[in-house]
Length: 173
Image 1: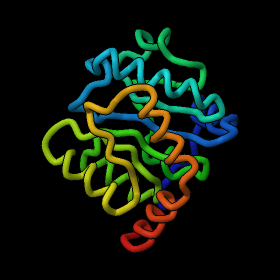
Image 2 (image 1 turned 60 degrees about the vertical axis):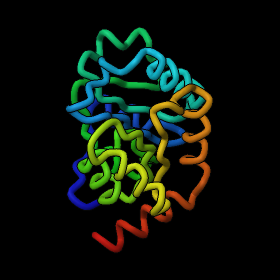
Image 3 (image 1 turned 90 degrees about the vertical axis):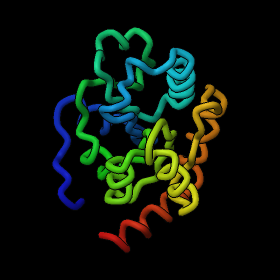
């Protein structure tokens, strides 16, 4: 993969062990995960439990504090090699706020995105990735376990999202 570094340590171990693939979750540096509403955490973590063969990597400012809430298939860290993980062959998608850098990363990697705009250009970006068929725009008011599960199933099962993301990657790459 283009400019991707080899994974090491916990990232390599968990990625190799992931039977059904890897999903990366980060809401960027301006929307810290520790400030995420508890209802959202419950929704995401509950949904992640429904996919025990998918490895989730989550950027979190206080990984030790959030660790007791996490299912075994979720690894939280203050920093994650987002671009390297997304370019790995087992990568399935990115869960993000839909910020400019996140959208650039998924386009560069040719992976779908589950985007929830929080402020600024993120709403437009989340709408754009859905309109282009390379992701899902999940609105803030729609975040609950059932919706997250439904969207993750679509990202994993609907190959058209990955195909569209791959086509866009080829066009800009």
